[in-house]
Image (tube, rainbow, N blue to C red; front, side, top):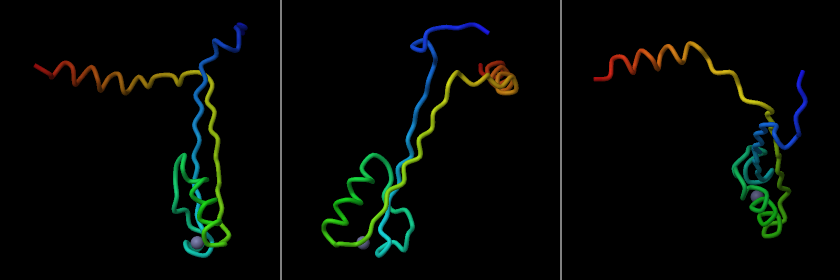
Length: 82
Ligand SMILES: [Zn+2]
């Protein structure tokens, strides 16, 4: 096992943000993405409804290994391309 600085570690981070209003949307998510939380807050301010926001944070370290089957497919496509 080799050690290297944390700054060299390939890291991918993504967030899934969804929100909705319990009154208007029956608890279903209706707002998605970076604006969802603000929309839920403003909707509460404007209506007094109880709104919600859920944020799921995904972090991946390292690169996934390439799938050799995919390389076979790409090679076959390249071979057929004139
Ligand atoms: Zn509402």
